Amino acid sequence: MQLRTGEGAWAAALELVEEGRTIQRDRGEGGAQDAIDVYLRALEQDPECTAALWELGWSYQVIHELDKAVQVWDQLKTCYDPEIPVDIYELGLIYKIENDPSGSVVITMTLTSPMCPVAGSLPIEVENKVAAIDGVTRAKVELVWDPPWDPDKMTEASRLALGML
Picture: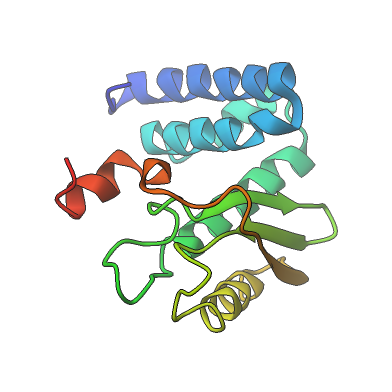
């Protein structure tokens, strides 16, 4: 969707928020990340779109959890594999993020290889950055090797940055 400004931005944000609500409802837990992506697009359209969430019947808890999820994603985008100039989100290393109302956040992630030189430090960096978010009471990284990472998990933007397109 093309970004809009002015009066049309709020209407576009409202449409995106409703789309996110539908995704989350129809796909259940698996649709949560899609709903977050839609929420981010809605914020781009209109930073004040949380009013639209209230109008659509979203609870404070849902809005708060989306805001916290956005903050988690923002922190993950500051973590890099030092050998690759692309953040871990764009590399496709993040498989799942779970947050609950108590403030606990669990990140399921992988690395490019079990022999990755940052295997001991990167998960700790991720935990520390997420734990620093206001409202997060506990951050935990679960490092998994199945499914194994491969370049297909990278975003188009990361492939472009690395000259793979």
